Length: 420
Image (tube, rainbow, N blue to C red):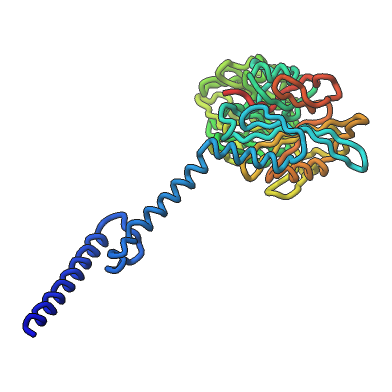
């Protein structure tokens, strides 16, 4: 009995020691950083489950992160989307992450030829989407899409925004590499192009010049005059001289925050300055100012936007068909015509579309039909670009659609997918 009693006591002591040891370990772990928030019990320590659960959780997060950034997985996902969306159609691989698809749709029993380019910028990471002008010297210029594509080392190009046929000056917002070339007209819709994606919105200009204690609104930049009351700014992108003043107007030549000259006649535009043109009763308030400061920005205030190209009207807005021709003063372009459109999907795939028209083998589209097409291609936002005789698409050295004029007419600007 004495011996048995001894072992029972020893057993109890050992068990007490084990529980005390477990509790000490529990206290150490609880006070250590990085431990899971769930309560931990002594039995959990014995079962060895404390360490494995958070480790597996973190591993899962790393796998998810790799799937979002792994170029091979991104390319595979893009390929799957394309094959599913354009099943049964002829899909041409232009380059990694860039596909060209030809299709024919029928409206009231009549055919419409459509060319589509779809691109994912994370997969096609050797390319950049950006607008391009017909000339690197002045906005008063036009040339063919093939010429623009060749000059910009582009693998894909489509015609861009509206322009003045006589001069080639873009009509609407145009920004390239953060530089505003032209301002908006009638606050028409435009696409903003960022390093990691796209956005669309109706764009307005916010400009002002301050001097002599007065702040004067600047209504636009490098655009033809719409109202005689407007104050317009012209840079060397416009040309060597500013356009004529309005009746009872004046011009101010400004460089380095200094007014160099004032005249009712066209003034030369400084290389590193600009000329303001507007009513004398407005700009006269700046006469004699020792210092002036101008600010020009855009609304919406797209932070870090690299490029902007305008068109109009909207076709798809936030996933819904939305065509605002009246608000954007574009009622004249309704009807069935050749069409050009751009948009993007929830997966950030850019979609470019050129629709042939005005011929028996392709009758063109109405804006509503075009909007339906862009939505069916998965666009969550899409806008119309210049169309009619301007519609033309270039892919890897070839004009792939059939514009009314072979090769396409001379254009003012384009949207290109250019090699970096």
